[in-house]
Length: 191
Image (cartoon, rainbow, N blue to C red; front, side, top):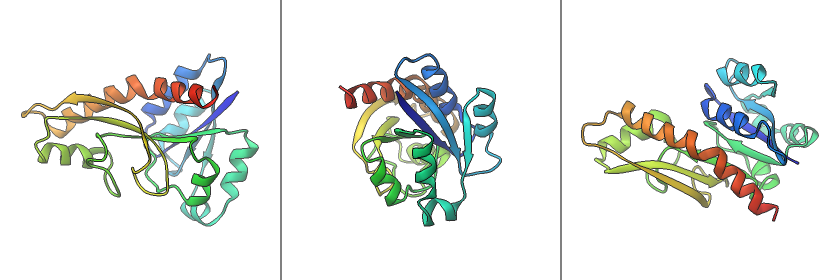
């Protein structure tokens, strides 16, 4: 059984979709939701769905490998970053190399890197006059948004689209594709 830990910072709409997708899966389950903000709405959502939660702080995340012991103690075999905004430290990347994925709200390598998240990305896409945008699901390495891409999905950007409208289109792609891509990747790892 693969046990996923979802790392999130905000409301957790992608986390919820992933939890629901794997709810009755025979080989994959979400075992933990980790948040770096003590009042992140994702924590209450996870608890309502019966998923264990863990709150982390910056110093514990970067200066100690205690988190790794907690993850292995919980039987976590795979990590999903779903709106988690901190750069993952090397000890965690190394422990889960090839078993940690992130979703980015743009077609990497465009509009990636430090500070490029959420509405910052959608405003940059709008300001650049891009005809399309989308999502990139990628492996996590020691740098922001530089891990190998596993999957991309695209949507058009109309000249009249606001950043908020672009965000809505991208969010729809996230909800549609993230969990199935995770499932397909885990199946490939285990075949």
